[in-house]
Length: 263
Image (cartoon, rainbow, N blue to C red; front, side, top):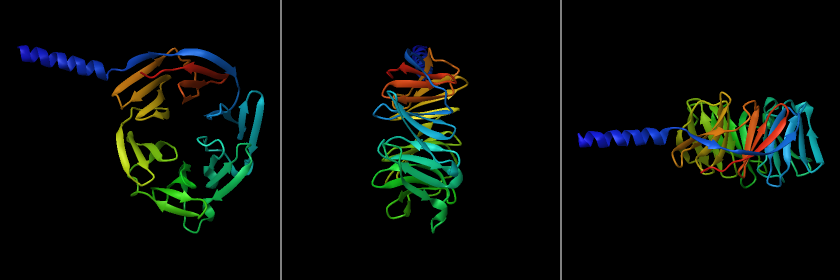
């Protein structure tokens, strides 16, 4: 009987630890801004957003813009290096890079490559390279934009990408079965774990991600095996962006910033 009681206590402890904890966050700033898409904030505090398919960079009354309507819709903007922004135009299979004044510095049209490449995921990598997911081969690779060469990194993916992001050294993605994977610049792939159903998602740290589902924001922390639901957040959000303990919530009326500390 004593052993059975101890087993019962252990089971209760396991259930409690796996339950989602509430995390109360505090609102401290709201900014009126009517745009089509809020992109994010760089390390210098500049805000980036898209309106009428034009990229804007804005801070303290200073505003810059980049427009290239001939390439169609802007699919992705990589902000990790404010001195070399990456814009991806998926419809035209093209990457454009910009300097910190939003002047175009480079354009790569992969449809003109001697070896066929159809890009469906990309980002800036280290050492003059782009991360490239080639949907023709279903392979992830590194494209050297000085040599115009693509180095495949791994075997073809078995599942399609549902979400992805990257930094200089790592490419992370969630596949259609909810598997969270990460690949380094040497081609080593590690499966982190499983992710719940989501509508929007952002990787925010080592084995940590922020995601939305049915109007609620959640944090999944696989490093510490914890899950949180964020309280006191405007549920009418269209997107969100997290950086340096600041959560920016974008609605149809503007941006609301919250201070958030992840335990």
